[in-house]
Each structure stands twice: as C-alpha cells, then as structure tokens.
Image (cartoon, rainbow over the protein chains, first blue to last red):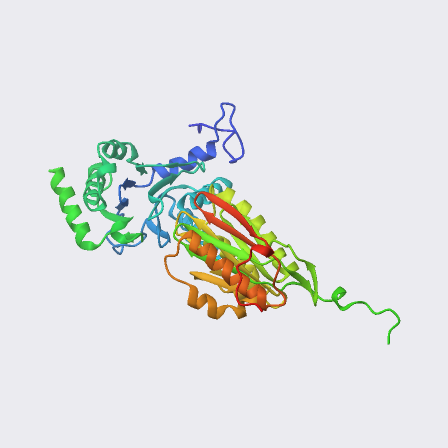
Length: 238
Length: 216
C-alpha cells in the first residue's frame, strides 16, 4: 500500500519527475472529501448554496457555517478544512480593511482575489473557496480559488464531493438571463439533486446571495424565500 | 550693525503664497493656479506651474510651503503609479485624495501644505476634494492658498450649479485674477488644466490676457 507520490510528496516545494506537486494534489483531495458548495452568477447577482452535512443530531442548527463575509459586499463559500478556511478568511478581511484605509473605497473583487490567491499559493491551505460580489460599477462577479493558488472567473462553479454532478446540473441552466429570485430555487434544487441520500444521511441547505436584490450586501437568503426554494427543490425530485 | 547682513529673502522659507482653485462640471473638472513663488518679500519664481500631475486623470494644486507641497505630490505620484498598475486601470480620484489626505494628516504638525485634488474617473465623473489640515471632503468647487481669502465672496456669488466647461474656465480665470490682484503672494500668469474622460487640456493665461476688473 504505497502512496502515489512517495519520495516527492513531503514538501510543497518539491516537484515529481512527471512535473506534479503532490502536496497540492493532496490538498485538493481534502477539498473533495468535503460536502458540496456551488456558486452561480446571474445577471443581477451571485447565489451560493452549500450542502451542510449534519453529522450528529446533537449539533446546534446553524453552527459552523460555510458561507462567510469578507466584507459587506464580498461573500465567500468554502469547501475543505474549516480551520484553514477561518484563518484564510481572517487574512482576507485584513486585506480588505487595509485597502479601504489606504484608498478610501471598497476593494474591487478582482484585486482582492489576486491578493488572496497569492497568499494561498505562498502558504498551503486545504480548502477551495468561491468569492462573489455585486456592485454598480462592475456588476456581478464570481471567482473560485483552489489550493494551488490558481483562480478563474465563473458563471457557475462547484467544489466538494459532488462537484462533477453539480457542474452537469449547472450547465443546464441559462443563468445569464435569470435574476436572483428565480435562480435561488434552482440552486436549492441542484444541492438536493447532488446530495447522496445513501452515504450521507441528514443535511441542511444553506443559501446566501449578493446582488441588486440585497443592494450589494452579501447576506443569508431570508427564511421565507429559502423555505419556498426548498419546497420547489423537494417537489422537483419527486 | 553687522558687517555683512544677509538679505532676509535668503533665510525666509520658500512659499507658494498662492491662489489655487478647482471646479467640478458635468463630465470633468477644471483646476487652476497662479504662478508666483515667494521667499519673504522676494519673488523667486514668477512662472511656476503649481498644478502637479498625480496621474493621467488626477491632478493636484499646491499651496503653502513649496517644498512640503511638492514632497507630498511626489510621494502620491509614486504610490499611484504602483496602485494603478496593481489595479489594472486608472485610479479613482477618491483613492488619490485619500492618499494625499493620509500624508497631510500624519505630518500635519511638521508640514505646512494644502493640496486640492481634482480629477475624473469612470465611477463618479469629475470630482474635487479638499484636504486642508488632513481632512477629506468632496466639494463642487474649492479654493485655497493665501489669495483665496480675498475671493470667498466672489466665488460664493458667482458659482452656479450645472455650469459648462467654458463657464468653468471663465469662473476660474476671473476668480484667480481677482485674487492675484489683491494678494501680494499671488500673481504672474494663470495655469489651468481641464480633465475629462478624453484626457487633459492645458491652458496658460498670460499677464496681459488676464480678465480685467476695477483696478485704478
């Protein structure tokens, strides 16, 4: 039972003879063990949906949220080692705060993304995350960063154990023509579709959004809208 | 009585006595200044351009101590160079003004300088910011320097909302001319820069072309 990269996998600064950095690949495995998170960009905002697996009935509902605010106008949805995520979010928040102090305005998402991706590359983190924001000047933007430090802009993106299945579902959507209110239901439906009833029993759906509907602030989707979205999702599965 | 007395202007601080001004209009700003630099009672430069480029779309007008004001403008010019490349585009006027404000506030006890920052950006169009004493405040127009005290009444009465670019040119030329006539530390020619989406236009109004008012 040899591990794949034996000899070349002890350090993130070691390349294997076939040009792979095994530590980065192992970090990505940590992300794949986490439950699914998806992010979709529509014409007037971004919606995040997270499949929160409930490992014990004794857990308080709503603890260990996997959507965080990096700034009022920037939301982050994550998959991977939660402790790493918290540390990374803290650094990102400091970055945002310093920018505002130096330049007097909200940090543009692309710039924040570059800074956080460089940080992820410099230090190893066992998580992937999506950043989303909406403002009048640049509209809706959605980016994803993986443990290698590479980032891409997306219309729709999925991370975690069911990311392939989620991506297939996302590709069916015409998100460029949809508004946040419609898209919320579709995001809920995708999480319900990709959730594995057999392997992982109970789960909670978490939804958050940032867009014209929230005046550019990243917030959790209000309870009534979330309940309506979940109802639609459950009905679609029947 | 000392045997060789140094003239007082050799030991006086070099000041851009000055009158400076900036006005917003739909689509841009006009920023203007006089051109006199004095050391005590001596005019050491009668044609200095006190409008300093912070970036392609942001200029500042210098007043107070010539050295202090130039030092601030130079630092912010450098910082904006890096910032704009980092951000991949023209900086926001507010960002430039914020940087000027930070330095002005941090060193307010050691320095005597007031910079008016004005420019155009895609987000909010033409903007004028006053940074006197280390504050940051956006204004439709701003005046500064020793000569500005003589023209507060004029600018308050002559300013109208929604002026055109040409109206603003006349407004600035008239105001600076009046101040230059009354303030001993202001004079020379008028330098004006107009900043819009298309870029910048420079203008110089020479002494004999200045608007004339009551001046017996």
